[in-house]
Length: 418
Ligand code: ASP
Ligand code: MG
Image (cartoon, rainbow, N blue to C red; front, side, top):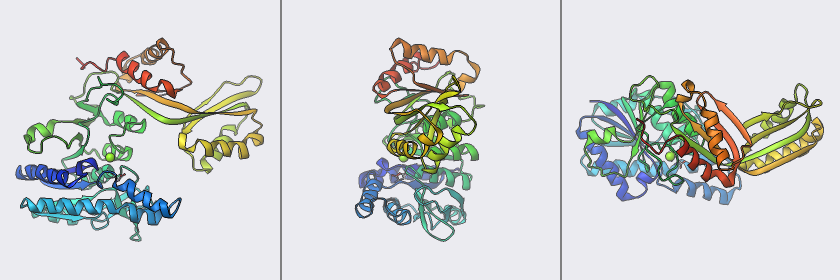
């Protein structure tokens, strides 16, 4: 007998038929003798609908009240799933986040989980009850309802698995695992049977939407055994087969690892680049530029500063495209004259493409292989950043799909590793 956390995303509980299907799948796991905690999202599209309603009343909705509204989608699905389980003759109980004491900080719309009191859940499990918990939500120390940021149910599931020291956390979703890249761009993309936490973290922060970044951080920190798999398979498929399907997020030491140098190609479309030209090269300049940007609550991604010529340098950085206009305004009104920059040049039509793989640590020449593949297609690289296990480049966004395709091929990702 194992204690297992299942998580079902919005598509997986998108209508009544699918909810019944989830119940059948859970019944199968229950029959095999496992203790089950299930975390669900709102029905697909529901959270968007709720946020849109709020925006019809307030252009930027009051965060506390927005969380009250946005968290309701999950309350519907927990109740419906518990009913579907009861219809199958199983014992089930639904709980909102605050009922099982998912304690968070008070950062409305992006709260962080501090602690989960798992006593109530354990008592139910001991009686053979399937515990259904609403994802995405919690409450702060004052009892205010909070939500964990879009896609936050993944984090709820992993946090519960950590708190309960579950044997495994299964994230059921509408794709059958983690792919080498987005199959909509590269049809030859392959499902990875394993990927390391570090790689998954890079993939998630670099644009892969399979898991919320925070859930991967959490799983890595608390060593939660995490698997991403499809909820759209036949609910009655043999359990042993299902338990091995999808992608296992694993540790580097594990023997199961595929032996590829590069595991995947990630990308983000919605980026913008800003350059300040002929900035005096003296201490405090980077701080004055990026300090003003940070004060406006804008996240900066890549940063590049040129070597200085005649005491002047160029300074470039990237931001999310949605924050581009705001960033340009801050620079033009608060920074440019102040620091004596010559010009501010913006380009909101760039994207970032990254190759990710822990094999980079032990292989040389990955960067040159990447740059050659892009050069052969005449794709100009505008910025480069690297970490131990990834190389990212900024390019013109009209080359995004081409770049992803050629890199996927150049690193042999369309072929199963030997
Ligand atoms: N329902 C929330 C959202 O759409 C949380 C989740 O699905 O994970 O972002
Ligand atoms: Mg999701």
